Image (cartoon, rainbow over all chains, first blue to last red; front, side, top):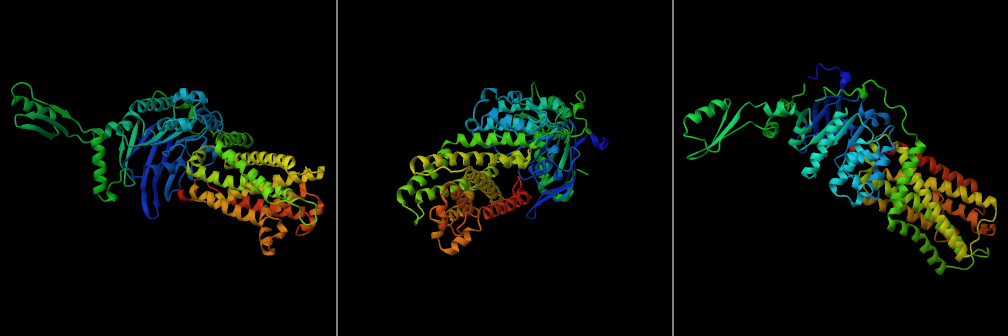
Length: 297
Length: 284
């Protein structure tokens, strides 16, 4: 899909990215293409290399090897004009300070040319009621939303979100998802890392699963969820629960119906969810030598 | 999903925003933020201003009487030292500690992701340091004049001396504080790291004692560092020339003062430029 796209349309292009910490490999030859306007999710367990990868793309960390281009610029050599075009929402917590929400956002808006109106940004993250409250008095989730506001106030072309909804309650997450979808509709390219599969499925056009510093799967959420064709047929027989993994669930159900009087108790046909597939991928990456798990090239 | 909303306004070969806000505006924004953060920490404000005042009143009670046959009361001599010491505390110690705190709590990392230049961040810190210094000098002068019989500088020339010694001293100590903060790994050690040189220099630079009463070797050591020269410069603004007999060179040495402070200023600036990193050394 991306190979046919001209390079100019790419917001992020990564080839053979690698990074070691004191001899320990954190990122082990990652290739990524993220198109402009795309919402791209990096999924993976802790220590998979998500944050390291994102920090390198943000220009916050040096790489050991590989080629990286973000908005056409090498982040290792980027200047303030490049930083004006990206927005960053860090994983670490925003410090609880003595500035109010409005003062904080106004401050960051002053660093850019043509930034968004602070009041609108505060409204977009749902903090209008707390605009005059000092950061110290906000809850953790509210401070997280201030951080998101900081990330978007400069009207970035590319927004990095590193585990943005960790610690959110379900309602706050939904609101956050709507905010991200809105930014995407306005043309912002978004790269997010997350632990949550439902978040990736809800937001991302495409996603990459990282494990052991490598890309072990790449595609749309639907692709990944569907890539294992086997479905599971479960029912409750007279002798207890049964479960069959099959390529032909319809035939299986028909056979069951023929051999059963009336309704089949507890019948269900389930396809592997994105989560099942994800857990499978992670397990495979753990068990297999790393050299066989690359999916990028 | 993006097929219907091609991001036309972000055409890829569009030049990046050429005109970002300039340094004066950014420095002002940062300065206001620093001032708000400082003055909203009430405890820190109270203690910053109370310490030199308490020292001044305390030492004024313990030591008084003329220094030799100079006609100068020790309490007046001492005001210049407390003022210099307060200046170094407000600049060197406060900047070093606050930058280490900013590094620890993620403030620096957040600023590093924006187009804000590091110079604007430092300028904001310097604005805060200068405002605190100015207030401290004003308070100490008021107490000195009202309670301890200090005379305000008697001539325009002495006012001028007061001005340049304060400004050059504050600028030098600010940059030195920033330079030292580049070497600090965590805010937990920052207070100790910044206070050690500050306290040692305070004791050997003529803050708490008449400088010429110190052992000669300590005088030599102190003369390498800025604080001794700031103390001496402030004495030259407030105190009569009759005191010159107690000064080591029997002269106010304005040329040497400017030279030593200027050298530290330039050296600190070079260290700041070479050593400062938004992200600290662990991110390499």
